Length: 62
Ligand code: SF4
Image (cartoon, helix red, strand yellow):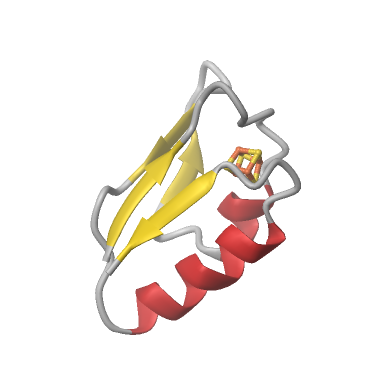
């Protein structure tokens, strides 16, 4: 699964980093970093993170 975040929408709420910490993280500067691919069990958490994102900024492609 390919992951992308629309940074024009992302407001750094951080929900995704709690739900899928293997994929999303805030760096020391407070910016969002994320893996661009997820497989297996991570994919399920990434879907949950995308649904929970208040800004609906997470885009997923199979
Ligand atoms: S939950 Fe959405 S708005 Fe918040 S940091 Fe993650 S992608 Fe950005």
